[in-house]
Length: 148
Figure 1 (tube, helix red, strand yellow):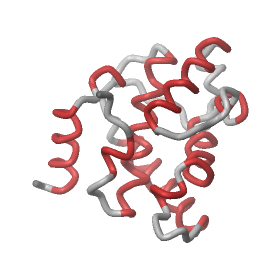
Figure 2 (cartoon, rainbow, N blue to C red):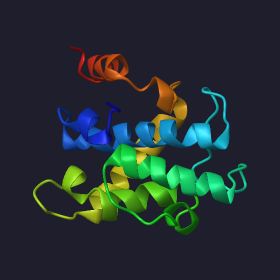
Figure 3 (cartoon, rainbow, N blue to C red):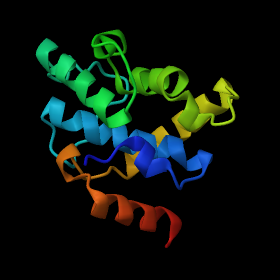
Figure 4 (cartoon, rainbow, N blue to C red):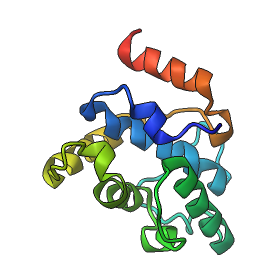
């Protein structure tokens, strides 16, 4: 069974979820852009400028739906064509229950965490692809994050 983002964050604090989500999202998107595992995805550059095709955008939307276990339009990548815009949209609209489990929507705090995690993640890029996200990877990630 594929690992979903909800599986990864189920035992994390709310503060660490944005950083984990950023890494998870980059790992999902990188193969669609045909990037090398160590290549950083520019957060403010259009996926289409980075080589994504319209068919790839629809495929990426399907991958996002399955991996995040949420319903969304197939046009989401067209509507939010950068890593930052897509991540902000997903946190604010698609993953409210994950990032705000008590129903509170504190967008300023969420946006601040997003930008802080973006700065941190740009200096320590994850070298995984979607194909390598398995139970062992999740266990290692949690061990690394929580010194388990």
